[in-house]
Length: 207
Image (cartoon, rainbow, N blue to C red; front, side, top):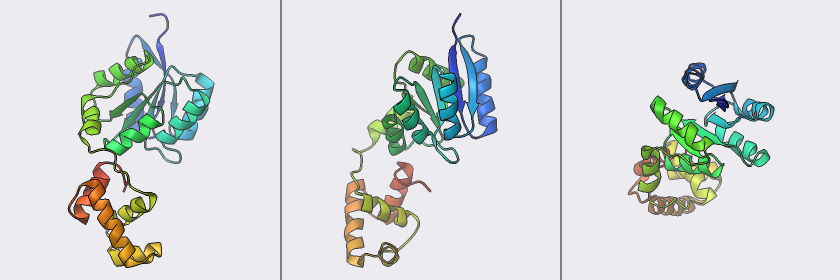
């Protein structure tokens, strides 16, 4: 092919970055034009190379992939981006898609899935592997937690009791109890342990 798909790879783990770059460069219709190890670099290299497709690791030091995707998209509305991540929680997926990413892959995908995603996104399509689509579909509607409830949930995840949460946030203990009750109801769970598990699995709270 005369014009291979030009790809920017943004991934902070060297081994993973080399792995992805090697797989991509082995394809006759693709070439890696630049490699970034964090979000800020990804934005700078995007400006410099204007790649056809950008592969973004969502967790990178400094600026992560979601923020980098938002900034690239703000500057280059036509950017084609694929998110690579170890996290498959539905909130993680929603955040990435909201940032303008067209494909969302967990890092355990097979090589051909990655290549399929790159070609699909390059062609202007959205690509969600079956497992990712299922994670989105299987979940109850997005938990409509208030900012304060997310704060309380974070403290529940870190193992705090209501009294400690009240002290930490400078609010009354009965207020915390009301928040907890509301959180359990919104997440559709019975107790704090289940709430903590759901929060982590769904990517609402990150450890």
